[in-house]
Length: 279
Image (tube, rainbow, N blue to C red; front, side, top):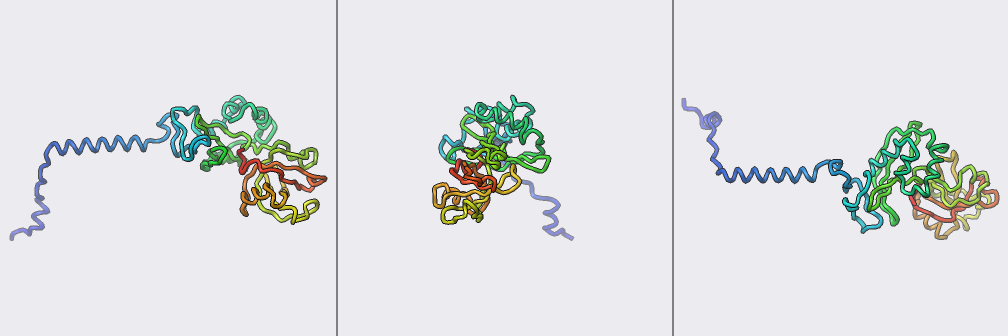
């Protein structure tokens, strides 16, 4: 019996046609070049030395929108490494080298880690939260989770020369302590950092809802909510209304108390210093 053609083909496949040697050599060279190109563009960021990658840096506030710092001008660690160094630092001197304004904030930072919130806190994890670009600055955000269940926001300011930690946003810095503000010892604070959202508490000196707009402010540093007010339809009121949009948002504000309002946790907002905790 003569085997079927299909079976014969499966047992004895037709030899492949020879390819000229120059075509083989050309294909090999092309494959090698393609591999080198892929290796260059896909290599991990840590292999590029101190040059920042597009994924790790926000656009600098001083440059054109969407531009990146020149890798040749970059100095110091990248934002993620800087955040790690700050949260693992053991001495004031180590932290001082990592913050954006050591002259202005050095004293406050030393107090914060000696007797303030940072004195006993222990960091458990550090989680990237993405970048933010404002008309004033650009920064990378990280959530610092603490062993006691709390957390802090760590912002690393990015410029054309490198990155530095914004100490004031990390410490939720207030120019006056909440203890002094709530007791009435301090009547005015040039900057407090809170979460703020629309409210409806029109009471006592702020009972006239035609004169005032009501807001609720909260902070991890105060156990109870605060009642903030802005003169209705004022520039401050319009900024707050636009900022909140019905949800709690971070804000840096200037406030003052009148009469005995501080004892009722009521304050007037006199200025929106920043929409967020980075000035």
